Image 1 (cartoon, rainbow, N blue to C red):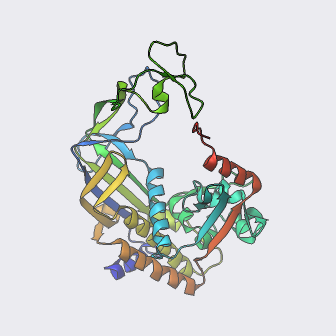
Image 2: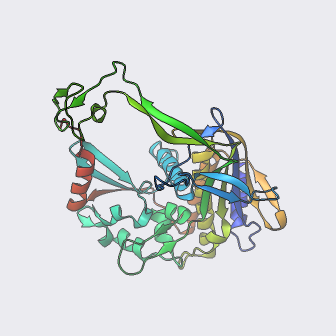
Image 3: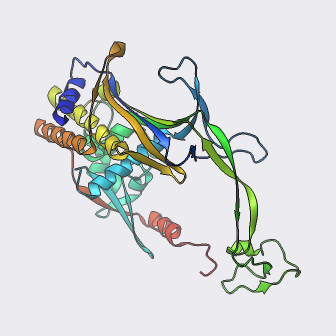
Length: 386
C-alpha cells in the first residue's frame, strides 16, 4: 500500500496532475458521556456571549448549515503535527533537519527546537540566536533562508521543510518579508453543540477559617476569625479553606465530532526550486506531500485524540483519499509507519536528483539578552518561599 501511495504522489505533482489534493476525514465521539471542553476565548464578564467559538458550517450531505463548536483550529492542529514530528525525530523514526536552541538556566538546560518555534524558519528565537558565535542571520544558512522565495525554496526544503508544509511568514525582520502559505491544513469541530453549566468550588478537609496577617511571607501569621483583615489576606490565597462554588465554563454537549484536513496539490505546484531540473522539482514536491501525510498520520492516525483536559475523543471512522474533479476520489489506507517509509524513499530520490534535505541538528545558543529573558521566565516565581 505504501508503494501505491508513493506512485499516487508522484503522479499528483506531475505535469498532468490528476488530483486536486488529498483529503483526510475522521469522525469521533467524546470518550466519556457527550460533553467536551473546547478552547475558550475572552468575553466581557457582563456579556451573555459564549466563551466558545460557535459557527454554522455546510457539511457534506446536509441540506442546511449545521451548528458546530470549534474544538481545534488550524494553527493548533499544525502545532500538534509538529509535536508528533519532533517526537518521531527524537525517537529516530523520521529523518528531518532541526534547529535546536539550548539555553543554560539556573534550573537546567532549556531546549527549544524549530518544530516548536511559533514562526518556524522566520522565528525570533532563530533571529536572536548564535551559531558557533555568529548571529544566525549572518551565517550562510541564515542568509539563504532569508533569501528564499516561492521561486526558489531550496533553502527551506533543506533546512525547514515544515515551513513549506505548515506555512511561515518572515514578519519579524526588516525589509522583504517572505510569505509561504500552508499547503496542509486541518481543523476539528463538534456537532449540535449545547452549552453546559458547571459550578467550581473547593472543600477543605479541616474547614479552615480565618485569615493571613501577611501573605507575602513564607512563615505567615494566622489571624483567627473575627480579627480585622484587609484585602489580600484570605486563607484561600495560600490554598487553604473552603471556596464556595462559583460559575465555571461548563463545556459543551455534542452529538459527535469531525476532523477535516486537506493537502493542496495546487499550492505545492506553486513552489519552484530555482534552476533545479523539472524531475528534481517534481520529486521535491512529492517529498513535501509525503511529509505532510507523515505528520498527519503521526498526529492523528491513532484510535483517539486528546486535545486538552476534558476533550478526549475516540475515533469512530476515518477516510484518506486522493480527490479529483467531478467528485472523482480514490481512497487509500496509510499508517504512520507507511507514510514515513514513503517520505524517506522520496527524499532519497530527491537527493539523488540534486535537491538535498538535511538531517543535521544545528545547535544554537541565545544571544545574551534572550538568554536573560529565558532565565527570568524559567526561574522567576511568585512563590512566597523565594
